[in-house]
Image (tube, rainbow, N blue to C red; front, side, top):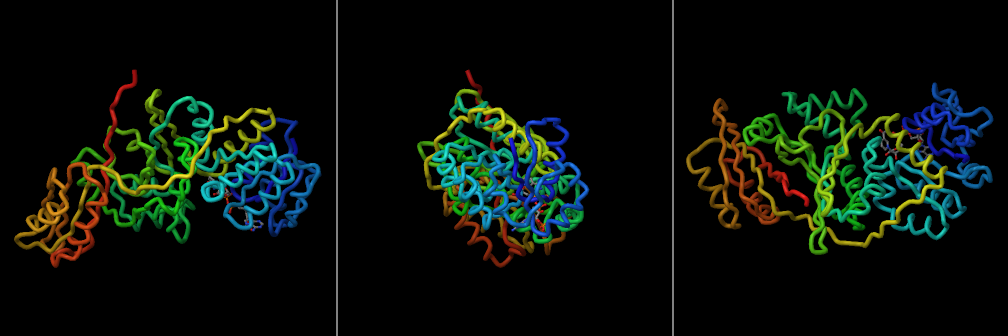
Length: 421
Ligand SMILES: NC(=O)c1ccc[n+]([C@@H]2O[C@H](COP(=O)([O-])OP(=O)(O)OC[C@H]3O[C@@H](n4cnc5c(N)ncnc54)[C@H](OP(=O)(O)O)[C@@H]3O)[C@@H](O)[C@H]2O)c1
């Protein structure tokens, strides 16, 4: 099994090390493609690439090489990678990638091309890095009818929110995540949910057999979450996590990504630091939890290596059909509404009036002592209702003259304690 490696960065170089450590002499890297390739030859992990391998800045040297059986793509992004992988598949080469954007946005066409050419396209590292959620669903759970997936697929957001749970401030902990290399200088893809929704779509295809467009999945930022939300969440027996969830019922997919109140009894609440956690709910097998290191060069390289081994051993992949489906962003759930107001009489009545207009029932009102009257945070929770019905009420409340900042509206995750037979 001869490998052409595209990208010798964090994961690419770690893959070279993991492959070398496997002692598997039947698998070797014959080509490494990267821009500025001389710089990469001086990389501390370049020693793990077999002597005699071709280091090149011309991608054609890999795509057209007769001595490349598998192209391992560890560069990332849609362009120019998509075209290159089409060329590799078209030339009858297997492809292994860790690229969630590519699989989320272009997966359908690429899988069709791989099937037509009789080659494999594996992407076990594209979601949750070293946690085998993709092969776990594709092989171990393909016998069940999975109706829901939910969990934490963005380690940066989990690092930020689990640190805030310990008392840190959002801005402070974001700066720490950036300094530690967990968060980009522009953290939008992580904190605004775009990275997570691409991963959610990759999982939805596999688990729910639903081909969904990432752009249709509503994504809510975690940047509005503050320390006070953790204090109120605690009182409700919950914490706050960025949750990605997709569910299929009566042929309709509902999906969303954003901060949610998660009961402390849910495994999702137990995730700490950059840990990832995915819970699948099957009609017959019940809930299955996958957790571990969702990112980092070595854990991700393990998933890549496992895919390479599967191809080398000629493992037959279970083909799971997927159908194009529209996404409904709406869910029925209890909701948490947090307000910061300049105190005056009649505030609760005004808020209750807005909620009554859309038919949402109040479940509880929480107000902690010790805040000044000019910035008073308090919380209203609702009984289960459609998130779309609350939208109008939240917009109306945001315009109320006592509102110091826009209200924060979060879904509250309900723990499903159904037993299986
Ligand atoms: N890092 C993780 O924890 C993790 C986890 C799961 C999945 N992934 C996925 O793994 C893939 C690789 O991520 P990474 O963290 O290893 O990224 P990275 O460190 O930035 O490595 C990417 C490599 O590709 C090279 N490259 C990028 N664009 C290129 C181009 N147009 N032409 C030639 N070379 C190019 C880069 O060269 P330069 O050095 O010149 O930029 C770099 O060596 C991505 O799809 C990512 O989403 C990463």
